[in-house]
Image (cartoon, rainbow, N blue to C red; front, side, top):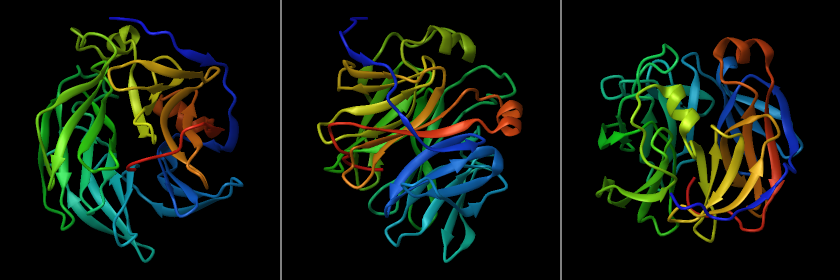
Length: 304
């Protein structure tokens, strides 16, 4: 793999909020940052001064978030593999994905038409099962669900370009970001948008993460077409150009980043969900997760 010179700096983050269990899937919407707090089973809306409102309680553990055209909120319920819809303060079932998703639901992108693109683990990560490929699921606005793409290595953060023509997906266990042409809810052939090394030969998750050059978790897109990603294997957030060149690197000073989102009044605030561990027992007991923020030069673009 060709290594590129990067601009690296020590973390210059401030804290938006702390004392949470494990935050993921940040979404900037209507002047607030929405996040899932896994182990308290809450979806939070956080103002710029750090005041959090619980907008939903999800017993099956909330993960991916996305807003429909009517401003209702879709929430992926991880453990029971369902999509829920929050409208008027009430949660209802939007789609049951248990027959399509072999592992816990994960990140989700909701597009301009209200179509949800939902990832899943593909295997029992916490039970120590070997890694295996899985699918990206497409859920139509009416709740009808189907497989959109197969043979993906832990499909995770997903973005849609401003022209709505390309869906970019983080494959956390494959050393890459993938891209698909998209038209009328149908994905074309996968191509590699950014490669950070060879795909792994092992099926041991922790060995894969140890050897990974970049393990991309949550991602977001900026107005120059670059992707910000949370590199969970190396405790840093990266700004990456198509092809894999690392344009910017920010160290997390001992924390692990799990997702990032551009937002704020001008789209230049980079929010990062971070925690010292992903161990479920420790995270649920100690509540050391934070949402951090820093200002960047290039604003947000595309979805989410």
